[in-house]
Amino acid sequence: MKRPATRYVTVGGSEIAYQVMGTGPPDLIWVTGLAGDIDLRWDSPVFAKYLSDLASMSRLILFDRRGTGASEAVSGDALPTWEDFADDVGAVLDASESEQAVVFGECDGGGLALLFTAMHPQRVSALILANTTARSARAPDYPVGIAPEEIDIRVEMARSVWGTPDMVQFEFPSRVHDPEFIEWLARMCRATATPKSAAAQLRYSHESFDARDALPLIQAPTLVLHNQNLFIPIAMGRYLAEHIDSAKFVEFPGADFFLATSDDAMAEIAEFLTGSRPAPEIDRILATVLFTDIVGSTQRAVAEGDQRWTELLDAHHTAVRSELQRYRGTEINTAGDGFFATFDGPARAIRCACAIRDRVDSLGLQIRAGVHTGEVELSDQGLHGLAIHIGARVGAAAGADEVLVSRTVADLVAGSGLTLADRGEHDLKGVPGPWQLFAVES
Image (tube, rainbow, N blue to C red; front, side):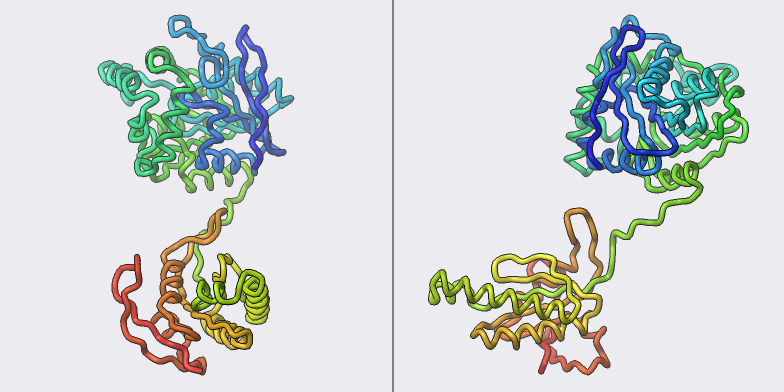
């Protein structure tokens, strides 16, 4: 989905950055807190997918509250009141020409979502609360809160790791082995606030915020989502659900602070908004892969000369594509004189390889071919997975005019009428263990 344009609306003398994407209905405004920048979020494939998924089921409205991201900075010594922060929500809805919206409060943005929903019930069609709380600090009537000494530890930790690679282990433990994500998270935090400002805002939210009185006033249908993250104990999520009339509470796996990495949470949101859960994305399939290339192509190119070799390559490519079409193969990639294709069955792939071999023989060319069946991963960038590497290595082990197949393929085509000869075990470069290969006899 295309990155939306950033616009500004003025509220309380401060400029608030916001974006709108999708068509809806419904409108959905995503309310977050400190760690975010409206523009940099789109630089992360993880968050870009998350926001695009939300926009696929709503008209999504995003903004940075005062003092964060692309919105106007505020002094740590003179932070706005929580009612002022809630005014940011209303101003952005007005600027987006939204009369009524689903309010989605996530992490430290949940408090603003609660306040706005209680103050403006006519503007809220539904409420989603994720990994958030009505109050952080412990109190005699709120034993699930955080002790004062723990608040001090959190504030100092935020000051010391803010904007550094160490942030990831606290906010996104599932991404500690993802260098690209780690670099992005650190950069986004630095763009959001300085360590001093982040620490001041964190202390302010922990020590001054209490929206418990708003909970009985919530009239909108409410979904409360919570996992085992390090910042907001799950007991606080249960407290929200217990004190909001008819709220649904869902605990989901994981420990990341935001929902962006959780398909389970997204499925719950989709069902809450649309009445149905999304169909699971098929990202891994069983496929048969075929690799072919011309034997001795470099020497042949030198012997033939550029013009003649180009003509031969064109004829070769035409022949290969003709046979792929005949046997219902799908061309995935062509590099030089080699082809990579997939099939929905191994017998068809073998017969196609033999047909290609016989066809190009009339051109005075010899090929080698390899066939393997295994699980491959689908992505926007194409096909990936060990099965592809194995197929390429099987092809590389073949001799001139030879079609080699893996043991997996040999077992699958038993009874098909194809004749295979055992070629023994081979070590395939970059693939663990010995592999038994078979040659197609025809």
